[in-house]
Image 1: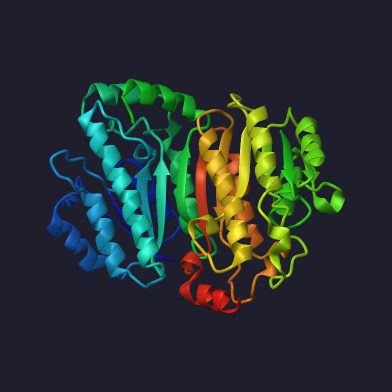
Image 2: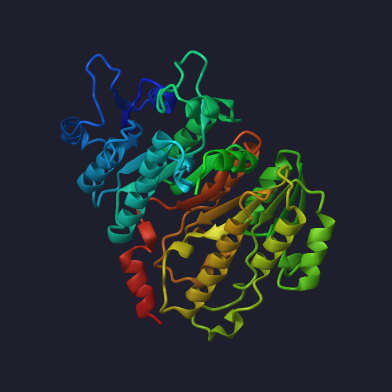
Length: 219
Length: 214
């Protein structure tokens, strides 16, 4: 059994992974901005505290993301860099949640553009790390398309109550559990096979994407 | 479901073929050992025409590495006839616009690592890179394609490589592919890069050993 740290464990895919890891018998710690003792990925002190407290863990699920159009960086990427440094040369595992949104950059919606750029940066950080320091930790860049949250969860507030957010809810999207099951499968098999990078989405999604790209001026 | 698999008599192709048959699917397998060399244009045409109505194509056979010793003069490795690439393109063209079709392509993680000092490895890498490049040009055109890049695992084709390369297990990679196929109607990976944990990028030691031996 492993010690697993999950950021953003109280909603969405973070919650799904957190619960699945507990069900599998792992020792799991979750941190979340919605927790009774809030932990905010965007606050440098909170990130530093997390590395100090849990660098002895085996697996990090780097899931929490907060959109901030006024900062060039984002908390999720900064936390990733901290753990890459802290776990350099080890055989630990980082499951870092990216997005297929990072493949193309929308130009017409500032929030979506920033989100896309953050996820592009996320991929670049991982690739650069592997190129210069290839001997660990094991990092999975898990990129997924839009998904539908369970009915009992609040609608995503990532992009706020915006036209873009409304538009996305009209798209065909995968079930969150489908992505979550992939993540769990990767984590459970981690000692025999590991995924460095994966892009997953609905099948036939490309037609959807083509419309999305056209409507949002993605370049 | 009707599935066509190249290289179905050994290694990963055999694993996936057996798993799909066990699930009750119809598998059309083509291997060099059964008379189908994908480097032969006529053979490729036959495979395509016999399987235009298939649901999924597992483009697994590589075709250029059989029976080649690691230290051989690489005459067999000349660029030009890349059977796996050509067959991939034929299926991509034939199934263009068909989003109900699926192609799983056996790629290699070596695409992401430059090994210029080994002519054999360089050729292998270039062949796999050509496939990866081709796949990118077909994204969004239908069918659903997955570029499944793998590290080294224990298969007859890997015998030509020096022993110091750590091999993964066929079953581990095969199980991932079977999972992709089983879930294909709800979720599909367009690109996946797998490897054995704990030995990233073939490892500096392995690269130095291999290049020092050439």
